Image 1 (cartoon, rainbow, N blue to C red):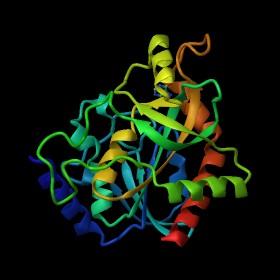
Image 2: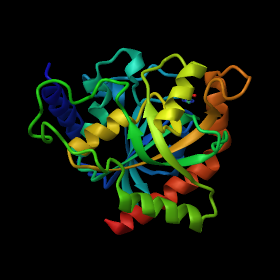
Image 3: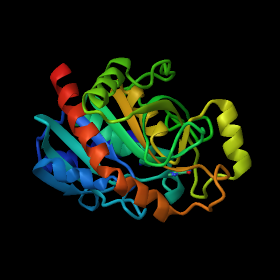
Image 4: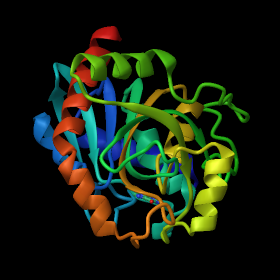
Length: 276
Ligand code: HPA
């Protein structure tokens, strides 16, 4: 099935269940799924109930949409996302982001857990994503261009919206939440990087590395959604410390900073909603 046909079918399946129109769509990264507790829930849709929708196999990813209100703003929260390393085609990986756009979300708020590639980062830091490096993973736009969504050659000079970034920055300052800023690089995974790869990424200007987000941002920009992103730096990337890296460490750090992260996201969404 062509990606557009699949997208429209998924949209029809959602529309059979609800006519909810989100203002802001929020994708929760590894270990950050608890945020959904902040939502005054209107409807929950497990991904498995949407025919053709990719279902995550990653630990710590629940796999459902939570639709409701947070900070006075209508939000669609993706509790769990699929990753390219799970074996899905890239068009399936970005299908949820596109679906949220087709449901009406004007803003896509992306979060993830990421490794710090730069020695100014420390585990537990939150990093506002300023820009991204996506050229190590296939573009989600490869294939016939779905002209109904966006142009063949979309501009990526401002993937992360400056005005939304300013809102998150101001919110962090107001809430006294320390916030770093940097460039996020997506690799396929699922293996963590080698120390030589981390040195390479640092030389290329990456501050954080992970296995998601950048392709979703590309798909969202393609269809004109405004994108904002925050990484939870769960660890320093491989080779930057002597300790081997495990997914447990990633989830533990994300859980440790969940309180700060939740506050930043809730307050940012409140402010973003007021700005729309
Ligand atoms: N590398 C890649 N992805 C990650 C990391 C990392 O160090 N930490 C969390 N996700």
